[in-house]
Image 1: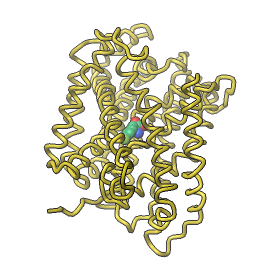
Image 2: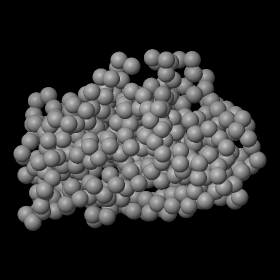
Image 3: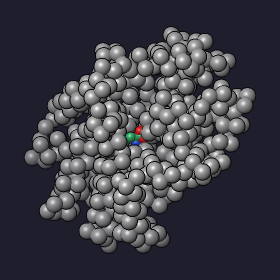
Image 4: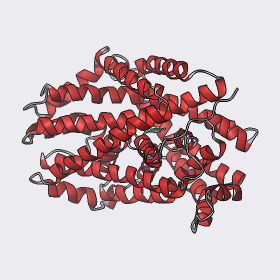
Length: 445
Ligand code: PFF
């Protein structure tokens, strides 16, 4: 017996949920430090190029596959592609699993930081003390896992509610709150004394800092930030109705995600410069540098609190979409109930997160290819699995579906698709060639 597939309750709900998937730790935690390490404005230009040339076309492609098949990633490739193709969907489900296992760890840190800010733990500390607070917190064996567990419960709770009354409803509340917090913080940051230098650094390209790895970094960041190449957009597309104008709404989601990344950089980099600190502090920028910046700012505790609440919201709506990829597969293909699928996956992911969290402390010495488990999980998904998945999805829609895909985009007759030809050209040639070139370059570095 088949039950009618659930759909989004409204167009706005779809946009908020999809923007919720895209806007996450990638935008607020990763993007500013990557820009900081890779020549500020130069990284920005390369990143924007990747989003416009590859990102948007692929978001449309993935949403469309989902909408055409009305199914989870594995089922969708089976229905539309036949032999061999379901492997692409299966790789997506696996990728979602791996991302989740480190995502909940870092998301747990953001929950802890909400409490730290509330308790004014960073009041009057300098960068050395703040580094110590962070490193000893993430190195402790139990505490970070408690926060990861709380985050997992929240995430499973939202997914249990279902598509419209769980994911959509939560996103419709949380995303506007996130935008408001971000705008308030950006205004605060750019009006700090000495912030101008940070704004210049952020917006002025310094091409001398651009290396071969900058390109790979930008494309993997675009994939990660847009939740691409592993079936998340595909899954959300499978809850779309045919009446929706897909290219227009996909552009909105891509635009919102990019705007949030740009604004997050505009919060963090000027604040860091204003406090006289180094913008290239890497992954620690958010958790080590930023709290000391808040500590020096008038009413900094409040802004600090707002910032970490924002980060936790961003993480939650993204994690929900990752979990939904796995849940939709288990429900559609394995016949599990939503409850069993969501709760069971939550438990398994938490168990995998244990070694990942411990890799920041007592298991630091256990490395894979010279990386801690956490860095490895991040690297292998963002730099390998997502771009490879994206490449295969581009080939699938470009060649296997081809004109059928263009036809399916025209869901209502009056819809004009002046750029459909260009879209197909990007998927057939530009995206595969560009992604392959960048991937290969990464290997020879
Ligand atoms: N886009 C999210 C971020 O920028 O943090 C991460 C992510 C969410 C990746 C969902 C993949 C995904 F399916």
